[in-house]
Length: 456
Image 1 (cartoon, helix red, strand yellow):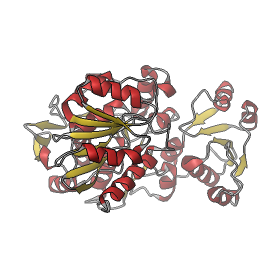
Image 2 (cartoon, rainbow, N blue to C red):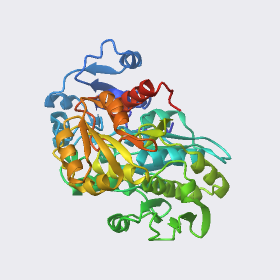
Image 3 (cartoon, rainbow, N blue to C red):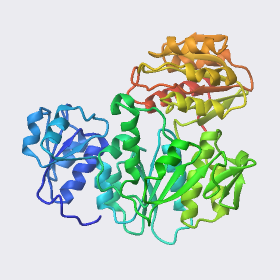
Image 4 (cartoon, rainbow, N blue to C red):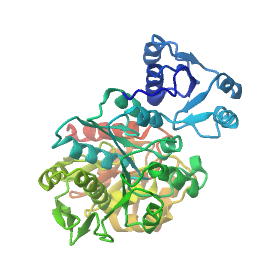
């Protein structure tokens, strides 16, 4: 862990516990700070909290605006909005307000790679980590961040010979000031999380913080299939490395005649990919660019991408039974993610969809529904508006389920041999489930119960 002194004897308030809060507290104690965690939950008997109390961390449930008067720095849980009274009060005092990945970047002495985007972050992060873990002369490559492992926990234990690949959400990036990845990756930008950011302009500004501190010795890997991203990239001081599934630039990684290339070097055929879909081709191109910037061999890159079977809850192949293939895409919490999932299949799809109602409509999904979907099982708060769009798209069979567990046997009854049964909700999970992971696990369990098979 890098020795830094800026937190020595500083009074730090951590707003929100969870994984990132626990990790930040431990790091800050090691850096000599005086740390207090505030969370609305009673953490008296919490195992992680008890462990931190032993090394000097204090806990409170006080979340009044006045609580900040006792502190110098605020570390905010990424999911807590900037409209929270504690955050508003801290900013009014001109306190430093940061996220946990800012700490990770400060204490880590090795190579930092950061990956962001509306969709594809986790898959790209996983691909990049697998590629950089191979053919190393020294050290290890590990991932962290929004992928589920607190980045500062990793950063504390890694050395200067190691590579840390951080999946970085817009929420996390907003709370950065010095965050400086050697390689930054931007997969795409859609209209996501506007309930948090307020406007698309704010959302884009948060995403672009990934490259804010880069310089001419760094690299910014950007999806050039989106003109907006190509224009945004010009504001970066880093060397721009494009990737393009549509072949719009051949300066980096790209596709031509259904073959993937790095500059002029052939890597592999698109149809050899271990996971389906154009979106996964884009993820792979970004990963190829990062791997080639590190000098990785074409043979190794192709071998890993051919055998890569996906990430849990992200167009994850579950199992096949009686000619039907089941896929878990519970992470598809927006319309664009479901569009990408549907585009990855040539066989008819029985789609399980619906979830939290954020006031969106599904008209822009109708062309995809009409092209790919045989039947729909809708549930959750958006079931009625989803069904309306499905019928408008010409989907004849639309039924309703109370939840994803009930939806699985209903989808089976609507399917035929050769069909894909796909959970891809096009909505967040919080109307019925604590997380998209919970929703996906319940889907998998229901599939296994229905087919009497274990997940592959």
